[in-house]
Length: 158
Ligand code: PNS
Image (cartoon, rainbow, N blue to C red; front, top):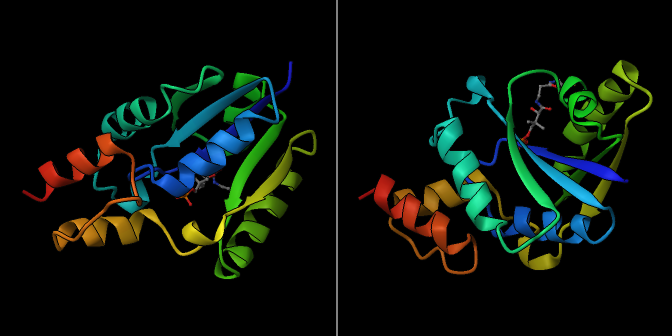
């Protein structure tokens, strides 16, 4: 059984994340979406809220599970028996950071392979932080986030 981990802070999950998760779910038997606690990022949504939103957003994908984690990525991947990590790659600005993370993770555990799925043009510049900013300024989030996230953001910034 091929199991892959799609990690992120998902604060909150966006349509871009969902695109990567959906495409990855067609390549392997099972996807675990790992929601990192990421306390240093002071997330807008609590870990429980981010997990609940990711579960709601992915509920139509039968081979996708969502789990929180609060440890090293490679340790979590080992715990859940995933030897593939899938990450989305957007504009070139992502590359340096992802390059560093992938190299470090490879040094920590060479049995775990990181692969990248490129964002389609419409999600190339979409990020959770942009979505939070649009929501904060009461902008239109249509097409940027799943419906459950739109409702949660509206409630946060009401
Ligand atoms: O969505 P993000 O915030 O870009 O995701 C970053 C994430 C959660 C994948 C990254 O911060 C991570 O792997 N965190 C877990 C802790 C860890 O392993 N850090 C060292 C990586 S070398």
